[in-house]
Length: 59
Length: 391
Image (cartoon, rainbow over the protein chains, first blue to last red):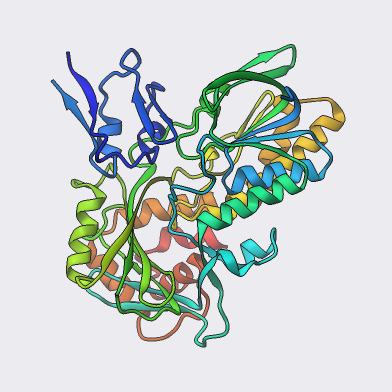
């Protein structure tokens, strides 16, 4: 199944991906980002916004 | 643990701490929560702010001033320089803050005013019950609830409070600057100035900045619009660093998203107010957010007091807060959103032409307004449509 994968070695936990998610799928608690797959629609907004290119679609 | 409050403030940045401080000073029972274990870190900010904006709310303390600047130098894509600001040292108009220390200072002022503060405490949801709000929180791994009359959401760019309350603040890809910044040491520049580099090829939909943090050290960063950029901000910045400051050593990386949405329709719902980045209060042209956040926090704190006095926490009552911020910095958010739309569309040749029209002398004042007015004066035909913004 396709999903957004988080490269935790790149993620700088800035929250930009949360701000652009229409579906409230991304959640950042302190330094830990979670993408709730039940809400994620793979719209790619967060992938395009991430300043660190820490997010990508995983087949 | 106390579980009944007049106000729960979510997020202890400049907006949250000012809101908590103001509400507590007005005699309200206030809880200020911060999801991070350390207030102020990791920093997500270029740290530049006008001196006046800070002085309005807090006494200056040298411990959180990293540098002072007298003006700005702006560079067009072809290198044409525009100088703005005081011509002499000693007339500093801008601060470069040490946010790690500044944010803690503000939180301590809130605590001193009587607010309870909890760190490593995340809000996990809000529920309206009988005209009040139940805030669910997780504090160092323990779940607990508190009842409050008002929630002030100052939870930053990644705000969820707005979404929970039904205020849609989701940013489109043309409404957020994707930013990366390095704290660079060992570089050569005049520490009396901040620097900006513009151009579609340099930073599509944004710009590169330099804010001095003492001699030979500076925050050098970039913001780009994801809707316009075809690479990540880090790639653009790395290329710039190689060309302009190859000798620099990076001792810190700062990453963030800055709202450039312009004024939102409303920052209130029943029992809820949003302030700062959560309310998309940062400036669409400069990306600056500290000054507006502090003002918004202050306004929210004063309206909270009035609401508690009247026993009315409805959105209708809280619209007073909307009026306050809209009549204050809301106007410049509106104006600068229009300017942003105009400027991000310009190609590099147009920017060069504009810069050349006013290059060669000091504009005197360091402000977007002054810069644009000078440009309009020299380029009335090219900029005819934005002239009316300043009348």
